[in-house]
Image 1 (tube, rainbow, N blue to C red):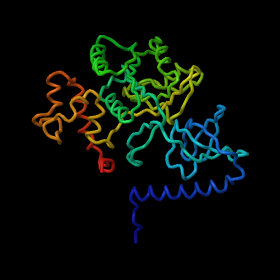
Image 2 (image 1 turned 180 degrees about the vertical axis):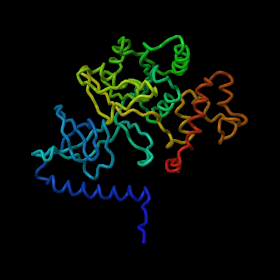
Image 3 (image 1 turned 60 degrees about the horizontal axis):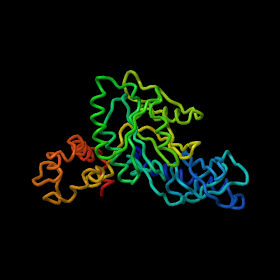
Image 4 (image 1 turned 45 degrees about the horizontal axis):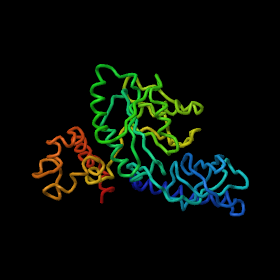
Amino acid sequence: MAKKKLTQGQSRRIKANQAKKLRNKDDQQLWQDEELSEAKTGIIISRFGQHADVESGEGQIFRCNIRRSVTSLVCGDKVLWRQGKATKHSISGVIEAVEERKTVLCRPDVYDGVKPIAANIDQILIVSSVLPAFNSDIIDRYLVAAEQTGITPILLLNKIDLLNAENQLAIEKSLKIYQDIGYKILRLSNKTSIGIEELRTLLKDKVSIFVGQSGVGKSTLVNSLMPELAVFTQQVSDNSGLGQHTTTVARLYHFAQGGDLIDSPGIREFGLWHLTPEQVFNGFVEFTPFQGLCKFRDCKHQTDPGCALVAAVKNKQIHAERYDSFQRIVASLGDNKLTSRFNH
């Protein structure tokens, strides 16, 4: 009789259970309580599967195991950890607990549900560029995500040295919309160093994260800000125009003048499947004055009679481009077959 084939879900659960057993076994074999020092605080510099790099208060970095009781751990988390009295198999200690997060940036994942990316962030720097082509829809997705978390977003237009008569008018028109709404915008060029010093000032004494489409120059900006790190970068593909993923693991870096930067893996499309239409509405900050003013409570803000949002667009109180972007995002919420797992 043929063996029954496991579903993807069953396979994932089996692998997860096996990993948990191995992890528990490793913890027991690797560390006894008397082999560990007293608990102290640290910050997660980077996460690698079942291990993470912890920075101590003295600025030293230790690779540690993660206790099974720690269910979520990301770059930027503040933790309690215990250093081993001796290093074993390149592991220097154990992370025992995570302090309460001030903020957390998440994105949906088809396997893991809503997945944290980084914690305790003060500001999100949304990087776009002239090449790959400027895309306001991607910016709007990041803005919705930022507004859900309460993290301050700042828009960066990179590679402005590539502006020309063909693209400048359209890009500046889009940027003016964000400026009218009240978002801070910074124009940058690594090639000419325009805006780099102003960016340093914005980053001082803050925990910041760069997000944006692959290839917009996030890692190159890190090189300009911290040349000593020599972060690996790649050129945008000449054939496809799409960026290559140049950062594979999120990592926290310190600025000499104060402040931290989390460099995160590139994301070509920032999914928002886990949000409801109401949450997307709230992510468009200029819609707030019109909330609750529609004739019907279940208004879809399309052809419904008495829609306050549609009226605001007609009266030029809301930019039509942003209204159209809102509708595209809401329509996309049902594109993924796993949407229901987030909204029910």
